[in-house]
Length: 220
Image (spheres, rainbow, N blue to C red):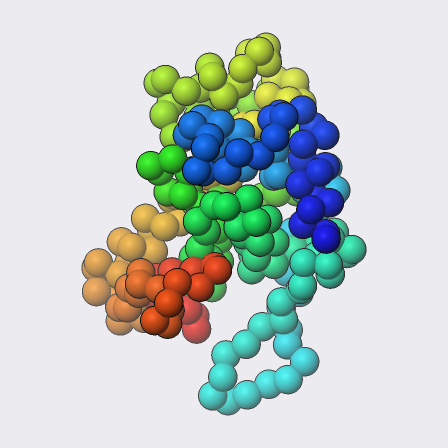
């Protein structure tokens, strides 16, 4: 039910009039749908909060505390895993192919939009605009900067207003996710012993609702 509530809130923003999902929406429209949910969560005031200490300890099992979706929304707090799980659950409900990307000491979200894999750094979701000339307001569309920036910004004036910032922040989250992926892959390719395992395949014999992609040693 809470996911349906967030989807309704996202529609009320007027960014899209319905959620068509990846089976019907064009790539640019898919990015708009992802952005609408992102903005709805921002309006709820979600902030980064890194409370990870588990209730129990073990010498053999690595663990951390993870908030449920309800806990994240109620507390308005989410760390990298909490935020990624929250967005993944909503995007999955919309029909998108999602994965949680695990790198040493961190987690972020991967979503297939069109023919592109969009990686989203969820910890920046609570970032607020810094001044009237915040550089995030001028970021291009990472899916196709040459052709889709104007389409994504739509009728928004090319200024540093709040709506331009909202879209710029979403772009920044995608760019940051892409950089973090490449950094983790580079560490693996260079033969770093603590990051020597790249596991892109699915867990288990059948495709689960949400996939895990592990790059490097997730215990670090």
